[in-house]
Image 1 (cartoon, rainbow, N blue to C red):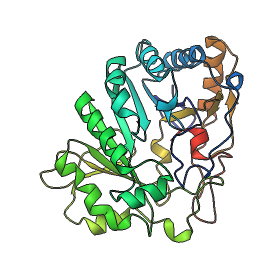
Image 2 (cartoon, rainbow, N blue to C red; image 1 turned 120 degrees about the horizontal axis):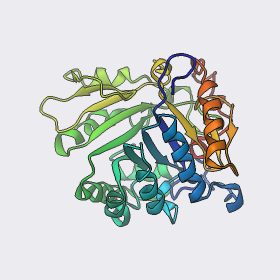
Image 3 (tube, one colour; image 1 turned 180 degrees about the vertical axis):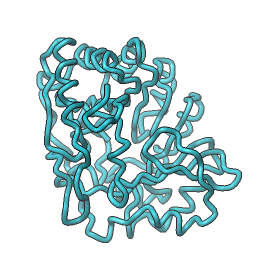
Image 4 (cartoon, helix red, strand yellow; image 1 turned 135 degrees about the horizontal axis):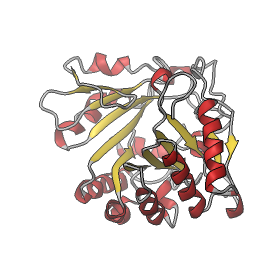
Length: 317
């Protein structure tokens, strides 16, 4: 389906939980969040009905997110049933990687084709600081498990934070020399009320190009990332720049929160509920959501924070 600005919407991100086993400082409060009653959350049946409704409108790619989706007890079943929906060509998942040693192979067997894994630093002390719990060793083992499982693509997501990990741009980028993975540097977004970093934390992805002048441009792959590659690397380096160079004109997605709210735009407070609806009713609500997509999300910076009304763990990263 095409929205009012001529963008073909082919991608839906579905959050299955607001909960997470980490407490990343730009995403969640230190003490976590109150667990939402199950009756307020989408059931597995409702999630799959939403996938069917989306597929009927031309959605071909589903990304399962959270919170941390791997804390969801029925996550493998959700992925397997989503991948089986006619018209869905790709089911992907975004995770912090902590539970991948146990779940990488079951997820691959369930039909998950791609894994995005969050990793903001290669320093054990800094990892403990940014996540408030968990260890770099756990994350590293998660990456190894994903590599062993043989996913079609593994991407490492790194949120670039000035004064925290901008001195690690080269070591992080060089992971693509050692492993068949892509790494994507993502500008820190000024979300609703999350994060404790000041104005200096918001640095442009142009810093990556300054640190890595040898980067070679790579042809676009249909994602919102500008792609580059280190000479002779096994994977690409992507730059995702929602703050310094928004990509709203190419946005092809809608989002569904774990409590059943469709968000036409990540940075808009507009939400359309599908909780409690049947597949046909969900389809009609999705049409409304696609038609409600704004042309762009407006300015984003330290003074102009996201108007989403939620933090990232409540929307889906």
